[in-house]
Length: 107
Image (cartoon, rainbow, N blue to C red):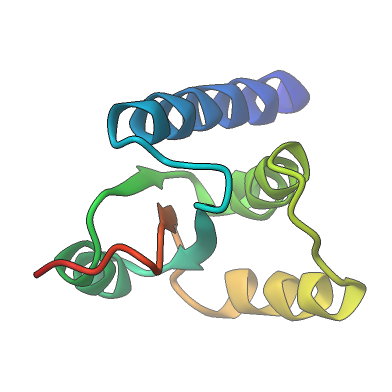
């Protein structure tokens, strides 16, 4: 059941990312920057960049959805980043995965 939930969350998030990229005319060099954040950090990113795609995910699934999304977007992640993220999700109040394009700040 848990694996199905992680897979379905990832698929829905990737669907939103792909639709938004098409809608806003992303080119080959335009890439999503993925991050796990708190609600306050999410609001700041959404204020600073457009478009952004945010999804609230329960903390138990957040890291797996984050890693699976990065993998499916062909973005690399290192083992040290994964270990740091494991600790951060457990200690911090991370409950959102946010994607934004750093080349597209709000005017």
